[in-house]
Image (cartoon, rainbow, N blue to C red; front, side, top):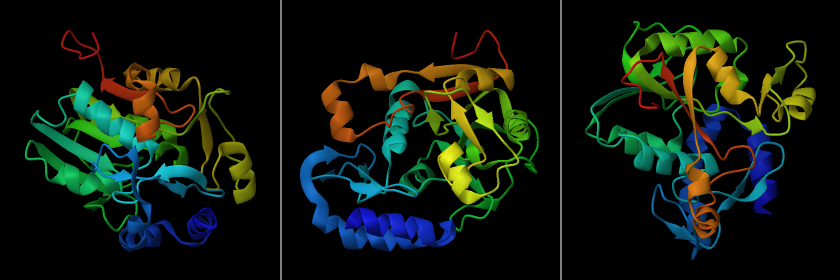
Length: 265
């Protein structure tokens, strides 16, 4: 029943309404999921299982009933804590399409100068098109832009703009949905939502990123670190925290340019 409800809501409600509605929904639903079989590393809560989630057809055991994190959010949280200075270094951060599990937690970090941006999200500080960022060059130490680039018509322009606003040796997290069985492809002539769902995995996606995603990022002029933290964790940890879907086991961090101070050398 819950899978059908969530599938219906994600199909019918616009993104802005879903964002506002989800807070209330989580408060109402979470008492029914208390338990100790799964654990969210972001909010620290334990549940008998996670909520189902997905556009089109919801899949079981994905969404944290408390902070609304998905697999990719939980893996990224662990990566930022264990593999970067995100929680300790003095950093100026721009976060596109800020995810609800991160928003308040990142804003509360005293070491960050943290700003959010989105085309139309009601929870973002600024309304900005990622292909036309009206901000100065070399401004940010870190840019986070997750599950955005598959929606953008001109992805090369988005890459260029993100690289432009990064400081020298600044870095970005650019996660996207990946099909590990194909190379990246797009077809601008495809505009029908059902055909986009079939080809690209979601009705509002304009391309499918594939197993060559690291090469796509290198071709855009970035130095790339495809981190394997997921595979460094024990099977029990991965299962308990539900950390990644197939194709999303790697965390892609890119750096602007190269230098002897590069964190990837």
